[in-house]
Image 1 (cartoon, rainbow, N blue to C red):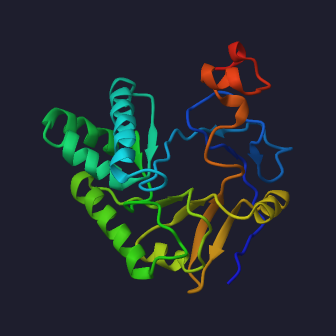
Image 2 (cartoon, helix red, strand yellow):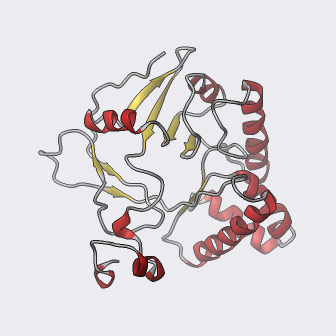
Length: 251
């Protein structure tokens, strides 16, 4: 069945970026009529996207993911006002068992970060599953394995699915997700024409109705899951690319 997009008045502006910044991206999305709104709330969601498989081996990617997990959790441990979102639990599980679990003090503070919601675990599956090729039982297995780890070690079962990178989305997913306790889904990849139509009609937030008539709240990213071009702060990148905001004027 086709997706249903009710008209929604949202008095907030949502921006997904890789780091918390106090700048408004040029491609930020405003949904609904904001003429009567006194305050616009900007939500920055610090996160990292890690592929379990793409150009290189799983072990190579794990090495990169482990460096991110090490640095992020160490930073959160000493900065109580910061949060970070993690969605790829194949790497998280391997990292936790191989590099954390044997150190009781470190394992304790990782569990505390999760309990406090500062290391925010989303998705639940070992990976962000493809929605075209796998059978339903394979998708369930992916979630079962990830949820089992998160539940046993941290006592959590994510309610939000973070599907930023699968190439397209299946009408079977709302029924699958609702059956395992998911009530929200964040999507990204779809045809430019389709996404542009959603942007034009201010329908990036909607209720997705699948084949089984199950409904799930859905949010589609306006652009991509990376930072807006004007927010890149890396001097090496800035030196080789055009950017309209001078480096010294950024956060």
